[in-house]
Image (cartoon, rainbow, N blue to C red; front, side, top):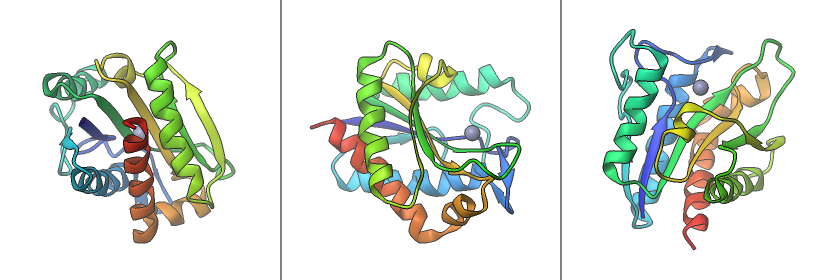
Length: 184
Ligand SMILES: [Zn+2]
């Protein structure tokens, strides 16, 4: 199976910031671990970025930046596309994990369900469930695509997990298991 892993944001775009963390750093650390788990499981993996860089160029439009990420997946011929993000809210209350897919994508929904089930199975995360939202990267990728919001960077308890090496590993293992569950 060919898998494209997309660490959200990067370079000039830090993503959400909170509790001393930048989303772009967390998504990259977790994505690298997902790649390693999936590679060990026999998958062929490409990442949209492997360092703290813009995938397009600094200051490009959001659509250009996101299309460049889709192009990497589409040119690779990925069977599965997983974008990794952290959620954020204006007040510190909301917490938990959710996985998003595009409306009408049966395979996207199944992939999202596999990943969300594994994330919730870790224990300790509020289950916000599956969400249907027309996101750029899930709409413009040829492969079944999901975007997972690991946890809230704006919530102190979630942020503690996002910053924790053991939890980063657990997040990654859950996503990798979700992808391999989808394939069976
Ligand atoms: Zn994000």
